[in-house]
Image (tube, protein in one colour):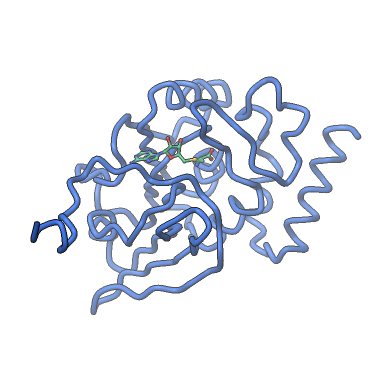
Length: 220
Ligand code: SAH
């Protein structure tokens, strides 16, 4: 099948799966996913599957990218923070929908490959940083939207606190890869509300932040 035909088939599949936001569909239609996958997987770029990138990481399945982007309700004037640049594909989609994307990746090799793709495609409104994204990007906060593309064990409050008033964060949360839910967290006057958007499967968010010791370890 030609690449155009597989691309159209993918778009139809996204619509069938309930992606109705035309801005999201159009951004996905126009962004060449093959630019973000390794050479050896180029012919599979428009299959609706996650694909391996470097360092044991994956470029998310198109359905998941579409679902998360739609759930984020991005506006054209917004500043969006992404944790887990990976291949750069999700950041590239967001860059077409908002004013500026700030994206943090902890793996140097992945980040430099993603940066090359942004340059090649002239996506000038993506700013990147190498480091631990669980700390957020305090110098640029607050953000209207935050998207986390790796799974956290629990809601990272450091990130939630970097949301502006009415801000939305979309994040997979769960203790193990087989027990993750995609959550939408909204900052309200009173605090935060959360919605469960369904089960997902992501690689873990690897945090360098010191976690408090569990109670039973403190006692021994
Ligand atoms: N958004 C990506 C998919 C990311 S896969 C895409 O569109 O291709 C998850 C990524 O999160 C991996 O690249 C992994 O290295 C990165 N990651 C994991 N923990 C992280 C952390 N604490 N800070 C920044 N990046 C992290």
